[in-house]
Length: 170
Image 1 (cartoon, rainbow, N blue to C red):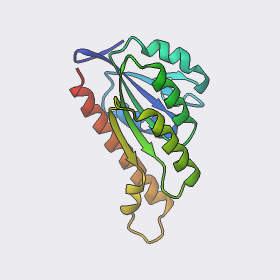
Image 2 (image 1 turned 90 degrees about the vertical axis):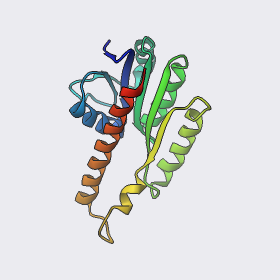
Image 3 (image 1 turned 180 degrees about the vertical axis):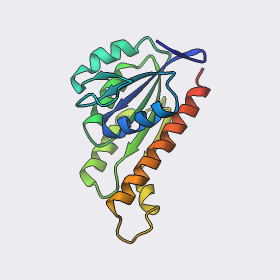
Image 4 (image 1 turned 60 degrees about the horizontal axis):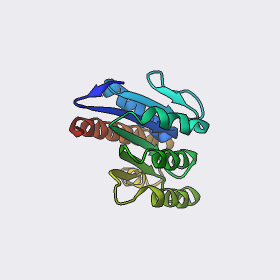
């Protein structure tokens, strides 16, 4: 268990969006304990857990002072986050969550239900939306390559924000 300053901190990425942000974080800093929840192992420098292993992960994380979550909402990863978040009630939890695009109606509705379970009075963190990327599109019709570049930039910015926040956690 590594220490960042005085606190024992773990960062947990869930699903595709969380994994992409974690990948960017590992490019900025590597002096934190990284955990990845996904359908398959995709990060080299993170301990991997499958979605069916939330109880085992919660047990491992219970020894930390602070857990930082990064996840996209509206899918299986958001459901896993809700479960894991609830299992770690006695640990400080910071969340950096990403909601789907406004036109992904089913995922958007599912993300709102997930947020309703997480955003209690002790919630700390940020809820970010991918819709802001659409405003940065120059073309009337967004191109896939342009959107992919914007998503990568978004991931880097969120990763930088999380690394900065880690420095403030005591």
